Image (cartoon, rainbow, N blue to C red; front, side, top):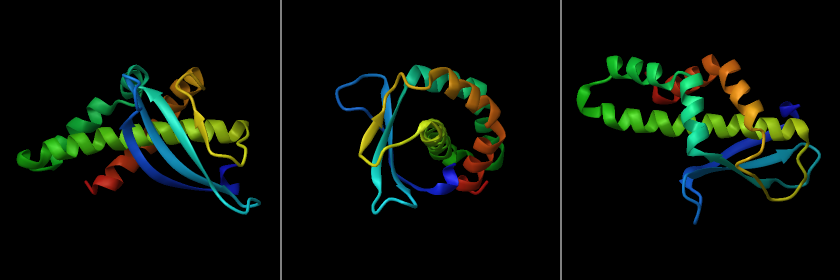
Length: 139
């Protein structure tokens, strides 16, 4: 179904304004049949990201990166890997919402939406997430 959509990452992860422990990523989403695209904000709780990091084995990925980069630049790579992981998790949540149907209006996929489905999807897509992060980091 997502092949019917053109999805472009816009920005994030950022802290949700006025909401501690919630991060957001924003995507531009356009369905082929729509005249224009919409902005979709995806919220995810830091707690859920921490659990997803365990399922997606982010710690192992960070250690792989540590072995491939110079020590003086590792901290930058580590932070970027965490940001990319958050973006990937948000994208998975967006894909879950698209599968359920997205209207042609700006919207927010709330922090409580698709909790269990997202947990399962992170585990299922673990290798793809890791590959995307490594490719973006060029390591």
